[in-house]
Amino acid sequence: MTKFVTPVGGHALVGGGLGKGLLRYVGQTAATAVQVYVSNPRGWALAAGDPKQDDAFGQGCAEHGVTAYVHAALLVNLGSPTEATVERSVATLEHALRRAHAIGARGVVFHAGSAVDAEHAEKAFATVRQVLLPLLEEAERQGWPPLLVEPSAGGGRSLASRVEHLAEYLDAVDRHPHLGVCFDTCHAWAAGHDLAAPGGMTQTLDALVAAAGADRLKLIHANDSKDACGSLRDRHESLGKGTIGPAAFAELVRHPAAQGVPLIVETPGGDDNADHAADIDLLRGSMSA
Image (tube, rainbow, N blue to C red; front, side, top):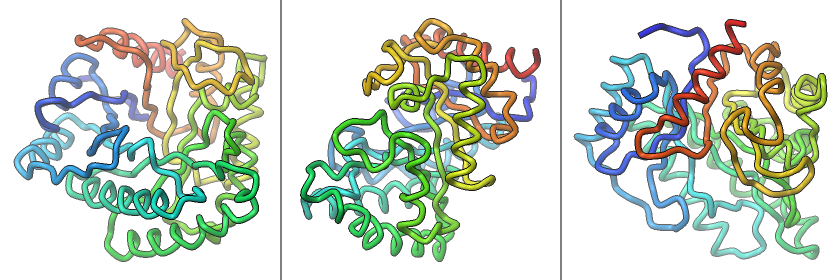
């Protein structure tokens, strides 16, 4: 397998077991990076995991030179006004961190969340600080991988959608070193960053670095979009086939902040993952152009 300096891959569906799913996905896409769920992405149930599959996943990553990440359940919202939601969110993130450590993943992605209603907006970041800071401290003590906050597509009183909002989110936890950033191109586009304009991707990444710091970006979700810039709609499309277009992704991989940062596609794909393989090839081709 050809080795690339920057790991590139996608979100892998691993039904039938983590280890089996990894090998199938890598075989179909030649990915050198993968992202997986370790629990129900749309529910609060937390799976214990299978130690044999965990070992197989870790061994498979080592043998094939794959960098792995975990995406936490989509229900996680640390800024929620509902106490039960916050408690479940913390438990879900702790579970994801433990599972990520067990399989050798490099980080756990979670969505920045929302204040939900106007009355809670001013209190939301205090809630984030109260629950996230102890979790970051515990993760650092235990040697668990870092958490990676991902700005949303906007709407619903999001705590971070545009990249500038990351400054307030990071400040809420004293810019703890165990909190990194995951940048999603579809989310940024939906939130109003015009990535398709000449220099638009560069300006957005420059703004991210200004808000978060030069070394805070740890993972990139490279996704095209089905919708217009500023739509607040999170609908992913295959690279070059959506409204963002291929030029923006070529600009992405050339930006200094993106050098060496793993790229994960979360684009539509069939059982054979041929679409993911094409997206991965497009990103690698942009790197070598």
